[in-house]
Image (cartoon, rainbow, N blue to C red; front, side):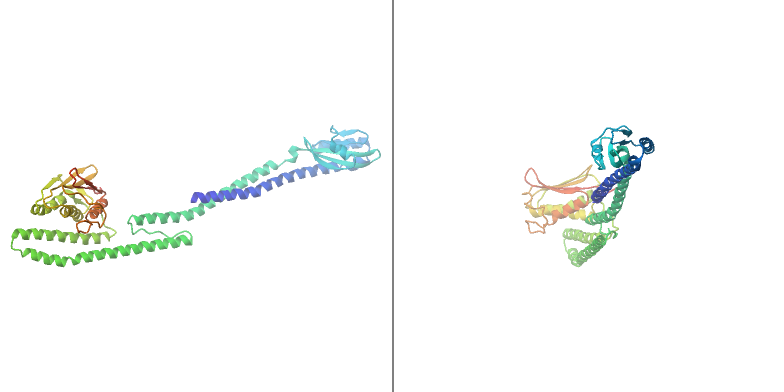
Length: 425
């Protein structure tokens, strides 16, 4: 935009200067020619009284004196054919002037001025002088140079003013664009300083108001999530009491462990909601090896009850990733929960956790019927669940600098690969 405004001003300035300076330059040349012609005509007319009345010697002396003073050729053609002054041919203009008509004509050497003189007894005499081209254009080149420099100076001044004006317009627009991109990247504390024309200041104020409103709405939404999650603590407490009252110690321990996991998930929801509402919050880090090992051990009990064989290949830790422990545990629970929800009892599955140069790769495979069509779509489920498990895993992977891949194994079972990035630093 800045370049276009400068180009527009330059074009308008050049066109305006051309429309003004070209006629002015032509006028300067015409004035110079007319000035030289008038001066030569005046010199020639000064000879009229002498040529019309004086003796031949007097006329000769006067003509020679004028030639010496003016520096231009002056010739007097007398009616008897005598030529005084600078030698010159009898041109058509001289012949026409001999009939009593004074005139000015263009010639190869310059501008020819001829004056008819009446009064001599033998007939009309003719005074002829020539204005050279150099005298006709004297000072024109210098005047044109001054005009060209003045035009260039005006164009440069116009470009400088246009650049300043364009800068005052583009800087606020650029700042608006920068702040809008920062808001799109979840930097909700980004604000723009109103500047520029009134319209841009109004847009800047509207963008700041929108950013503030989004910040308020998100804070309220996260607080509501935290409040709703906190309400789950009461039924969890009752469930824990019921679990502790079981007579079988093994059943009591298993149910209590499940309640503990659920309570940790609720606490994680509360912390995450409050953590995201705080502008100064940092990025979470957890040990993938410890979290995956713990969650696979938890699900192994249910796998044993349903006759499923569990294969675990766990790389030696610690394996730090850029995902909070509670969030990673929820992701592992979602992936393993899908195995139990979408495969019949007795279907074996495997969990593999490996580290490489790009981060940590978690792979969950089973020998079931495979993933249903549209399984990766949020809210899509063919087993009566919420359909959010894979979406939760995908969002957690992207938040940790990774991604989620779905595939099919050689035997037709599902293959889920979760790539998790390393924490910064």
